[in-house]
Picture (cartoon, each protein chain N blue to C red):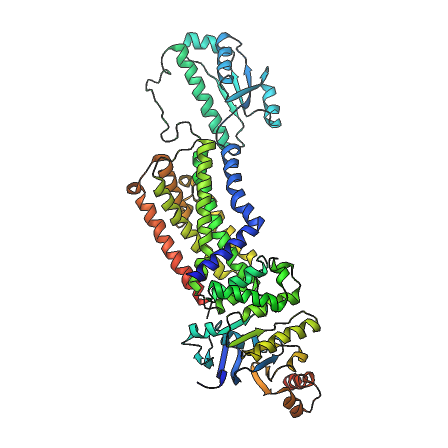
Length: 368
Length: 244
């Protein structure tokens, strides 16, 4: 036990004396959360648009006013001719152009039916779809107001309620995602680097010659990083709570247990990588390519898994991050308990056990 | 128990089809300084790694400090010290922290570590540098420190794998003073080197060529046997015999 404590203490010296490591450990989560929370967002704020109003009547002007007065769209320019549209898009000055035909008001009044054209810059398809949806919603609302009843000839009234995330904040999606990513980064990459560093420096030989048991060496290397990943997970949660008022609806205890489980899986992957890699560079590349990229792309954190081709969807199943991400979202946003997330937990637990046994076995064989 | 610190019988290690050490047999007496010489790739490091328990031999026997290297690994490990070719201290730890760490993993208790630290710092005249990072020390000092740490737990045998690579002759001489001191206190020293002047400092030396021990005796008798003036000549004769 004393040997173990001596080892952990030494490991802490390594961590706290290396500014670069510290920066990665604590700077990365903060930067990622802020970046994903503020900068990279699916929401629409003040998108510049242009309006070509050929009707110039009360109805058309009120429509324009409605669209541009709610913070989603800003009026960049009033157009006078169809020819002006193309150059604006090419310049990238506007994201959408609304064309109101000449007889808008009278059509609407007499025939109870009028058309509006929405032109969007679909070079960014996701964004274009979102813009159109927002604009549609505003126009529909406007129509209801004038006619006094829902859209004709449609008589089915749909009432949409976004459950668990009513204001559609994308940060709610990113906080669990970033947590997954950071835990993977800290646990897998950092451990694989720290173990290969000892190999590179030649100190691993000394450790192996010493009476320390190999398991103790691994544990001594890994335990400080377990503690660190807990602290970092806590930082991320607190940031989500304070900056983006992201709630944790489920039990905190369950959340931490799941974090520990995923952390353990990542750590054993790190140990596994270090038993193959002989230099810090290799270890880093392997964890980047083999762990971080799949975690980012196939965990459903940025790209929805449902819209991927089947082979990729199947591939995603063997990625621990996918299951962890499901658990996190369910527990944090939906307030799910173990009775709801037992299946992903079981899968994650199985993977953890598998990686753990594999990494311990592989580490021992390096002695012989 | 015998009077030998190390006994090997036909110790062999093969990597695939390549035989790194080919049935080497030798004994090292207790308290002896045993030089293990050979060109690069002759199999010195492989042999040493087998004796330290870092590699499992393909075949053959070895008894270290009275314990079998196959079955009594734990006991062997407690009784040996090891200093590798690569510099083996942690550069981002201070001198004191390194001593405390290695003392700790060899199971020394707090009081033992404290007294060992004081003794060691005084012997190496490193008292003022005790709280400095090891990375700030000159190479020669680092090597002396690494040696002192390798014997911190009073092992019966210490294995040194090219311990003096890259330092000037004066520092090398000082390093050997430490080795003599350890040997005088009863520690068996097993050292690989390719500096021939160092070979002369050893009680007995063995010369390995292509995984086999080609010569084993005291430096004086080896020189007489090969009719040479220096160990360098002995070594060259053996190496040439190999290439012809």
